[in-house]
Length: 368
Image (cartoon, rainbow, N blue to C red; front, side, top):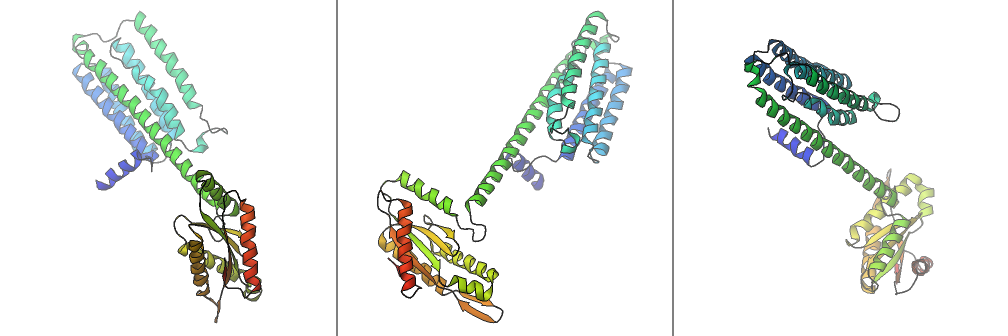
């Protein structure tokens, strides 16, 4: 029971949809119940032919629900149900006359056809992804509705005994009530599935956006994404205080040449991991290119230096292994502080120059 409640909650929260076989089994079970009610009322009203017709219809829907739905023959199931509703409603309306509202069920077939066709697998639709069955169903429903209305105007009911006439108000309001419930159910289900699809699309767009904004190897932002972040923050705060840090892995070419590019990739991932661990929540970094990373650090000049030194020290402490050999990695960092009006490209060049100064003077250091 708890699992069922959990599934229902997921459906209304648009994190899942009703499985097709369950959906059709519920619809068939509902139709069986409706025809069972008709069967009882026809028996009370002494309308033998319609009593037998509804006995057969009850068994028919039980068969559909447990045979065709389990075999996922949803298109065939709908066509069979459509034919049954049209035949049953037409015969009942002609034999009993106006006021019983059996033809109202045929109107429910129109939204039901469009909704159910929407849930059919792609292979039962045409090359444009559209099923023509809903359109054909609508045309048939319209023609039959008018035809029955005309026939009721010119043909007297077959059954007009007091026993069935006393039940006409019950049929009238019962059929209207069930039709409203069906229309409401189709509308809610359709709305829930549209919302579910929208959620899937939003999640997929977010995932694609995340992929497009990240370096596939290190999962750091790419250059364009960090540029966008920096420019957006500057636009939102004209007094923004931050520094840019260029980090370059020392002797990276030698690592690739000695241990291979696979190990070189592992070094890049390890260095990115160290940066992620040592950055604060509002700081950002990207893979600038090759073995270089660009970091955006908020705060004062002292903050930039503390974060940079923490990262440099964390990288230096990393121990990497290749077979039986272990080796260490170091990095050189250059810092440039943002001043209002300065171009980001200029600021990057300033940090780059300081990083190269550190490279020429011993490496493995932070240059402010």
